[in-house]
Length: 254
Ligand code: UDP
Ligand code: MN
Image (cartoon, rainbow, N blue to C red):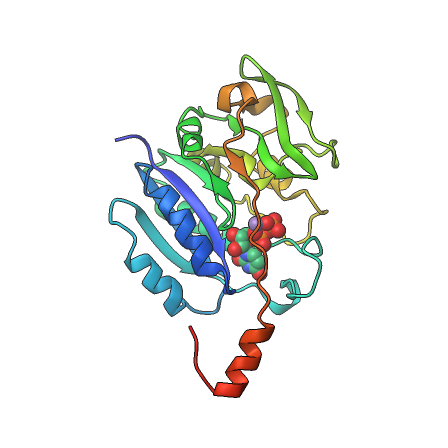
């Protein structure tokens, strides 16, 4: 049995939530030894996600948490997406869960898995190559106004970073573009994401808090030549007709 990969997924209620989570689940069902930590951005565990989790095959371990983003930190649905970071307190709740429960079994890896991205299952084999005090890094597709963004490597060594946006960040990468060993979180138990960091600095912030810098980076995914993860985003559906019909018929929909 390979070491577990702890997948940390914040998720919030919206019309496409079940579709996004179902697609993600069907990817994960092809991978062994996963522990999926799902943290709802909600003040309680919702029925939708509770029922969704009941249907997850038992070979995927699941932990269901909830942590509501305080209103002052919450992105309104008509705010531009870059205004506030998303998923911060949810990811922190998952980190706290890991620190609390895994001091005695520190094997495994941690990967932050957003609910609307697209993952090639080969990324999980890459994650299992990460060694102590390394941060595994790889390119992420369709992000930063590029076809892909990420490290440039030679023999696993990162020689430069292919990024157009804020290239001077300690780690100029996306949340989907790195993973570490669980030991790193257990060894830096105070490390947390922060609601207030400059835009684009979440990844750099947490990795710096873990005591890692660019010299710890190891390039995976065929020397950073393969794109195995895409920062896809699900379009927000229009509901004008739905609202009209609902009013006209008084019908309920789910
Ligand atoms: N998320 C959340 N609460 C929110 C907005 C987003 O928990 O109010 C989650 C979302 O489900 C996803 C992650 O945070 O797993 C990143 O959000 P999103 O995909 O909207 O960010 P983007 O793709 O724009 O970076
Ligand atoms: Mn997203």
